[in-house]
Length: 477
Ligand code: SAM
Ligand code: SF4
Image 1 (cartoon, protein in one colour):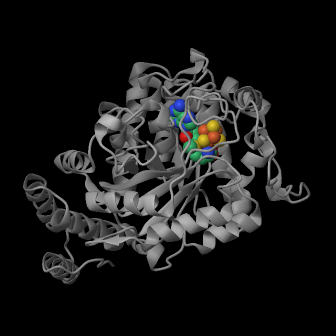
Image 2 (cartoon, rainbow, N blue to C red):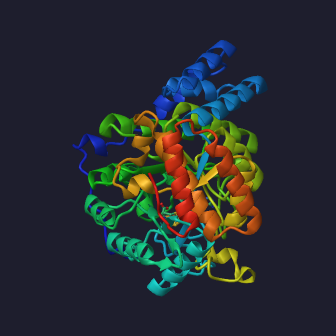
């Protein structure tokens, strides 16, 4: 197949474009940390509880801690740290698949070019508007748009779809933040997409292990490990400083991938002085026509442990968990440090507007395990004392690096994030929640208000809540 575009080659003399993953170095660090003593593990846990970033060597110690007692201590510490750093907010979003044409042959993906069973679709502008309307009617405010890799889905196309999404306003609904999960672009391409007003640009490396990478990416542009690993550096050069990294768990040893993710964070911090906004760690799910060696599948036990380790290693990086995981796993790891989840997810092409009976695995990228509606997820979160948040305030006020603000300005979470989470929850309760959820939600808000000692601030918040009840929308601090 002829490839119509080819991304401009990166310049190797530019330091930020060099591959920074050294397989031998990671293997060596994992080996050196084998069989850590209890004292070593506890020392590392203590360091992270003081909200310090962990080094690769320290993270390798936690990875190698296998005694059940120590694993429990890691999880308990992650729970504590999460509460200290993030409070009980959980940000909610939904994925929206724009097109499943793909030139690549990733062995694990239902969209791969060789999978002839997959029905190929690209949403028209009208289809896209209908999907967005359906998502707004469920209560969503934050979306991530997902694309296969194909000449048709170039930067201009992506930018156009972003603008279309922002333009759809239905009843009280609107999408206030659009994130992207798509193939790496060149610097010019990233500039074009940035101009459309995107939030985060996510690119998952899938596996940081080069040999495995070549094995599972059989053909297409994605086979170029270096082009992919330097993708987000180009995004940064193109002006996008809000980045999401990720590894697809189950392709290679999860221990190596956790180290790779951390190395990637270190790279951004050292070259650009700002870490990625989020880390994703999807586990491979069943999909139409995939060929995956089951050897590296990650057990629930290892999965929950690795989420806790990531929380401890990078206290200030958002962790995303998706509906690939079943509800029980989602509920467990929410406590250990996940800060964003999707809700009411449907990853079929045109999935949000079609009847359930029509759904079909040959129309989706992989199977999801959590198909609860957004409201079911909201109700569960509220019932467990989490504050679901649709807040997009920083991004829209141009407080760039929303994430940076959260942690670098003392008291920011208390004065901005937490009250904004409450305000967006109230909007949801007014516009979309059934009565039972509404009652539970307002009870949670009442309980939260009791925690505000600054009465002037509390009154401002109560005033805004009253305005929302009267019909005003989009109020934030
Ligand atoms: N096509 C672009 C790419 O590959 O980067 C962007 C979107 S791709 C549709 C989104 C992500 O889905 C991939 O990066 C991969 O990690 C994940 N994925 C692919 N197949 C999967 C599977 N069988 N189970 C779980 N996640 C999968
Ligand atoms: Fe295409 Fe992305 Fe699927 Fe690979 S993971 S086949 S690039 S859609």
